[in-house]
Image (tube, rainbow, N blue to C red):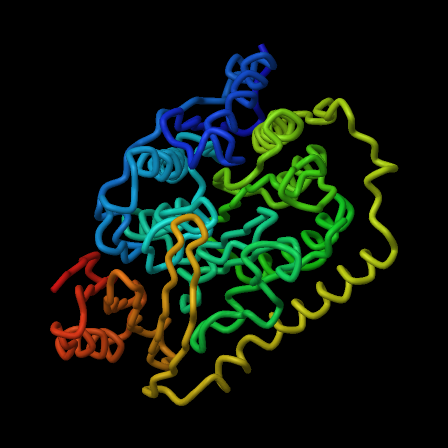
Length: 435
C-alpha cells in the first residue's frame, strides 16, 4: 500500500445548500469534481492521508477576528460556520500533532471579509483563515504566524484584519489591482504604523505564468519567511490564477501549484477562490494534496496543458523582477519605517470607504490607532452605513499596559447615543463586550 511521507489531514465541505445564485461562479459544484478526482485517484487509500469532518465555529470564534454588524447570526449561514469550522478542525489536527499538515477544502471562501463585516464582499462574509488563526493563538498560544495568500485576487480582508499586527506576517501574491477586483494590494500597502512591513503585497501582471509565481516564491517569499521565522505557515490556497479560470488573466498550472506547495511547506492550507470547476480545481487540489503528503505529483497534468502556449513574455518577467526587488527593499526597511511612523502615545487616523459588492452596502470608516513601540497598538473603528453606525474597539492579543488602558478608555468614553452599537474586542482576555 502506498504511504504518505508526511501525514496529511483533509477536510471537505462543498456546502451544497449555499450559493449566491445557481449560475454564479461561487456555486455548489465547485468542489464536486475535486471530490470525484480525489476518490478516483485513491487518495483516501493512501496510508497517512486522513479525512476529518468539519467542526462548526461559535460566535466567540468569529468575535476574535470580526465585528459582525449587527451580529454574527445575521450575516452568516450555517454553511459559513461549517466552512470556518473546517479550517478550525484542520488546525486542531495539525496543532495536536495528529498530522504534519492539513488542507481544508471548504466553501464559501472568506479572504475578502474585513475586521468589520456588514455582509458579503467578493463572495465572502467571514474570514476563514483569520478566524482559524485567532483560534490557534488563543487555544495553543502560538505567537508568530505567516499567512501566504496565493489567490488571484488581493486578500484585502486578511490584509485588513492583520494590518496592525507585527506578529502576523501577511503576504499576498495576486493579479495587479489595476486590472482586477478588489483594486487594492499595491507594494506600498505595508501595514499599520506599528507593523510596517508585516503586510507585503505583491501585484503580478496579467499573463504571469508558473515561472513568475515560482520566481517570487524563491526570491522574495522564502527569504522573508527565513528571516521572520514563523511558528506556523498558512496558505490561503486560492486557485483562480489557473490558466483556465473564467474570472482572471493568469497562466498558472497544476504543476506550478504543486511545486509552490513543495517550496512553501505550509502547515495548513485553506481553499479560497478558483472557478474553473472542471478544468482546474480537480488537478490543482490533487497536486496540492500530493505535495503536502510528500508524494510524486509529476503525473498531475491538465488534459489541455501546453507549457509553450503558457510561457510569459520577457516584459512580464522584467516587471515581476522589479516588483520583487521593491518588496525586498521594503522588507529590509521595516524597522526604520516603524520608527518613523509616529510618536508613541499619539493617535494616527485613517479614513476609508468600502463597498460590499455582493450585498450592495457602502461603508465609511474612520480608524484611530495608538502609536506604540511595545505592541500592535489598540485602535477604534467608527463604521457607518445607511443602515447602521457602530464603534468597534480592538485591544490586540500582544497589548502592552498602555494600549489596554487606552482601549478601555475608548470604550468607556464612547457616546452610546451616537452609535447603534459599541463593541470591545479584548484579545488579551479573549473577551467581547457590547453596549
